Amino acid sequence: MTAIKYQTVNVDGFNIFYREAGTAGAPKLLLLHGFPSSGHMFRDLIPELADRFHIIAPDLPGFGKSDMPAHDQFAYTFDNLANVIERFTEVVGFNRYAVYVFDYGAPVGFRLAVRNPERIAAIISQNGNAYEEGLSDGWNPIRAYWQDASQANRDALRAFLAPETTNWQYTHGVNDASAVSPDGIALDNFYLQRPGAAEVQLDLFGDYKSNIALYPAFQNYFRTHKPPFLAVWGENDPFFLPPGAEAFKRDIPNAQVHFFDTGHFALETHAEEIGHVIGSFLAGKP
Image 1 (cartoon, helix red, strand yellow):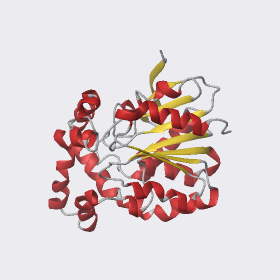
Image 2: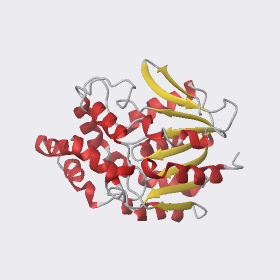
Image 3: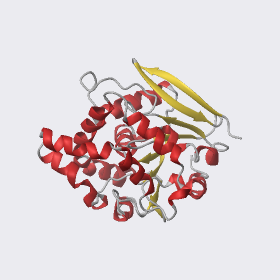
Image 4: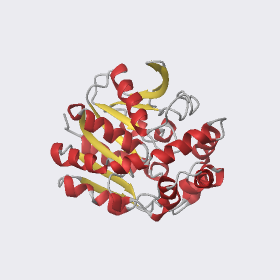
């Protein structure tokens, strides 16, 4: 059995909830979740790696059990999510670490890497995009909101927050939907139904355009620093396409890319396989 601690730390007045496992002296691994999830999405991956790594998986601001101030009290931008998580790593003593990024965790983690490249020992991207060819047509309704931030376009995005959409995100592209635990879906939907959560998420939908504007900066970081890089990709993802995974090789020729026959939430069906690939990839990394 893997011992996992569930803790909360105050980060400059912002309470961040996190999961922690492994030995404090082991190589450090930071896990950053995506929309609309929390650190709970790593429940099956952590036991695969905790015997070799000191693992921390925070809930991003506004997600899971971390603080979710109202959107008129805290600006929900990806810059601000990165600001809080950057300070979080300092508070918990993660001064140099490998980082696993997924979905929203990617623009947060890539910001951390650009700001402090010396802290990044390696990057694992699981359906975490940094290239325009990785964006599918599924982004078109959100693109419309970027181009015209009208109330009508904002309200049209509320469908992304519906329980049936969460279920679809988890099961689309999965060969056997019965292999996907309903618990993660139910938990995400619980958090999405909290008062004020919809406005938080709609603000982040609107700000996602800032991530695309930073793609050249992310790519310059990859070319300049060439961090050890692994892409583990659910190849049936309806949002982030396989060309987005292959594109990392343009800037990091030695990047490893592995595809899995599953959807967006690849850990729901392939945690053991992905854990094995990550363990092999990180073996011997300083």
